[in-house]
Each structure stands twice: as structure tokens, then as C-alpha cells.
Amino acid sequence: MNPEHVLALYDDQLRRHAQPDDPHTTLELTHGVLRQTSTTHGWNGVIWSDLDHTTADAAITAQLRHYAGRPFEWKLYAHDQPTDLGQRLQTAGSTPEPAETLMAADTHDQPTTIDLPEGVHLQPVTDPTGIDLMLEVHRQAFGTSPTHLGHHLRTQLAQAPHTIAAVVAMAGQRPVSAARLTLHPGTDFAGLWSGGTAPDWRGRGIYRALVAYRARIAAERGYRYLQVDASDDSRPILERLGFVPLTTTTPHLFFGESL
Image (tube, rainbow, N blue to C red; front, side, top):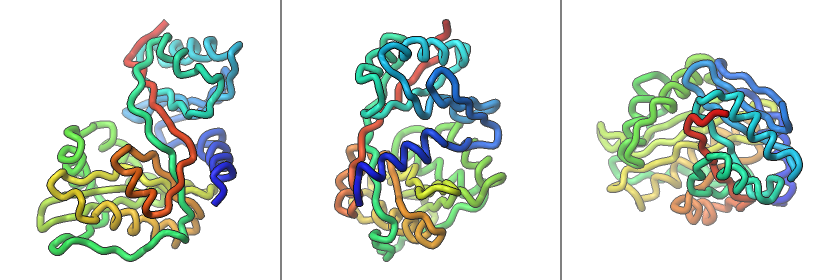
């Protein structure tokens, strides 16, 4: 796999020509950025930009005015221009979260054998009850149960079920790990998201099993690449599975500032 080629495809298909991730959102190309705006509880923010040192500040100001005091995210990639865009965003009031590594792998190179610890089984998420199990895993793994994630998953399952495949690993009646696969029709990419495992169940191969489960689905549906924003914890596991780093991405959060 050629990382530069795959990154160029990613930028073109999932950023420059992104599709709304929620029926209640709109995309708009303006001031050199592609932004998403939600009318409900969905994600607001900048997906792609084509800026330079002469246009960046005006573009940032335009987004602050557009979102009019609502929280939003500017998803910054290491290769975005200008090179000091991150500093400009912070000067304008953003708070950067920890950087993650954008990684990709050829779907057909991924193992699809699912090996689980004794007593653990996989339960596909097909209804609100399954989403509640996913949120419980999120609470155990990360200490939060984000309302916006629950809203997004319920909307996606109800209105665009062909774009998602989610699963929960159950130890008896307890949800101990969960993950989802986001499918992007018309592109080469399927995305791995929301992978998390309860602390007392880590290190037993469940994360790898959930990658294999989702890789099998992506391959069956004709997607060439898997992509993931990997944390420092998951990056070593993914590298052992053959995922290749493409770049890094840093969420810059604006908590309701306006101009």
C-alpha cells in the first residue's frame, strides 16, 4: 500500500467531497473550508480546508461567526496549510485535544478470524437497546457517556442503516467492549470508530477481534481500505495488524466563542 496515494484518496473522498454524516446536517464550502452544520445534536465543524497564510485568519473568523456561539470542532491534519494553522486556531480561542494518528490498511490484508476469550460473545447492534450497551462500554472505557454519540447512532441506525455496522462484546450479560464500522458509499473507505474496552478486560485480544469482525464486513461490502484515527493506546495494536500511519490529526475545539 502506498501511504501517499491512500492519503490523497482520503483527502479527496472523505474530506474534500465528504457527505453529511446525519440527515439533519448540511455541508457548505465557503471561505476555503468545507464545514458541517447540524440542526439537532449532531457534529458541527470543519472537515477540510484549502488555505494559506493570507486567507487562514479570515476563514477562522468566518467560522466563528457562522457557528454564532455554538461549540464546534476544526479537525486539523498535520499536512494542512498553512503550517502554523494550529497556532492560528489557538490564538482564535481553540483548545486542541491530543493528536491521533490517521492509519489505513488494505481490507483484504486483514485477518478475519475472530478469536474471543472464553465466555465472551459478539452481539450486533441493531436497535436502541444495543446502543445503550455501547454507551455503557464507553462509560467503562473512557469515563463518559456522550449524549451526542447516542443521538448520532440512533439516527444512523434508523435512517441510514446501510452506513453502519456496530457490535458489542458481551461477557455473560455485561458489555465489556464495543466498536462500530462506518461505511462511506461511493468511496474506497470504511472507518473504524468507537473502539473501547473496559479496563479489566483489556489485553485479552477483544480489540483485535472487533477489528477482524469489522474488516470482514468491509471486505464483503466492497470497501478497499480501512481507516482509523488511532490513539496512542490502539496504534501499536493496529501496526501489528498491518495498519500504516498516514498523518496525524488534532481536534481543535471551540467552546461557544463568537465574534
